Length: 180
Image (cartoon, rainbow, N blue to C red; front, top):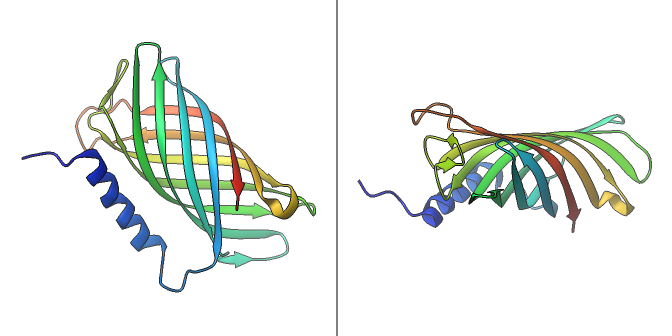
């Protein structure tokens, strides 16, 4: 059986994400662009660039705000002897805490799919090109209208042992985002 091409697979994941996260009445929210730099296993570096859509809050009180979000982006994993890249789509939740007039701290978690250009990276056998991606973040939104974000991210990629051997890949890093 012929494997689907990378861009077709990524398009399929994007359409599923859009159907799950974008109900017809969801017209309000906020877009942001973000970039991340992380240190990964096997003495590697990981870079992410993504767009995030944060929906209107599901819950708000004086002390917390709970917001759903969706992201889509590209990743590059590098080491001196090999580089691979991939595309990902994710959904998640952000829990913001009360703060000052120009800042708020938050906890964020996302989960989704990544399609990579290779199933091997250095000494890691990922089992297949399609990987689940989970990310936990601690961060702060700051500035006028809270348009800037700075986060510490911990990310795990894995095929959940659905395609044989699964070494997985883990990173820890920093990201910066700007809402518009």
